Length: 143
Image 1 (cartoon, one colour):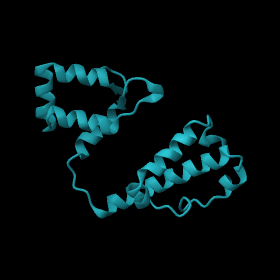
Image 2 (image 1 turned 180 degrees about the horizontal axis):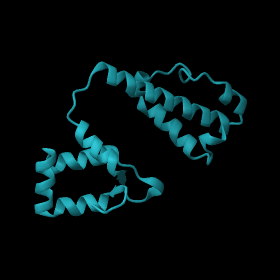
Image 3 (image 1 turned 120 degrees about the vertical axis):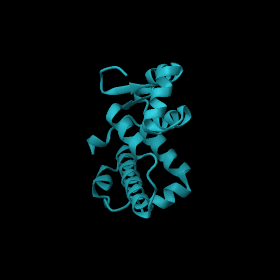
Image 4 (image 1 turned 180 degrees about the vertical axis):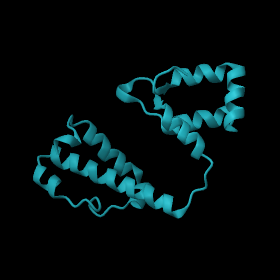
């Protein structure tokens, strides 16, 4: 892996295509190459439609945590994060629709009565809201 802070998809592919290096990383992590690819896919992102990449520290941390059991508290934290994201998207949409005052005054505790669980049950509504906000060429920082 190069000396920068990021692991790019191309680098991971090179490592996994090299039989010796792939075997070494699989032995160190206790994971298969498919598991490594899956962890990378979950943690990586694609800024500005460029190649997928993940911060080295995040990838290492993800590899260390990937086998930890899930508990109710971790699910509740995830639901809370989704709820905050939903609220942020609502603020961007309201701002873009010319409702800047409504966006600023929106309660921070939840997004229009939608819980994290609701978003997991019906992710398409969240996807539509994100797509709409992304098309409006504004940022949350403007709020």
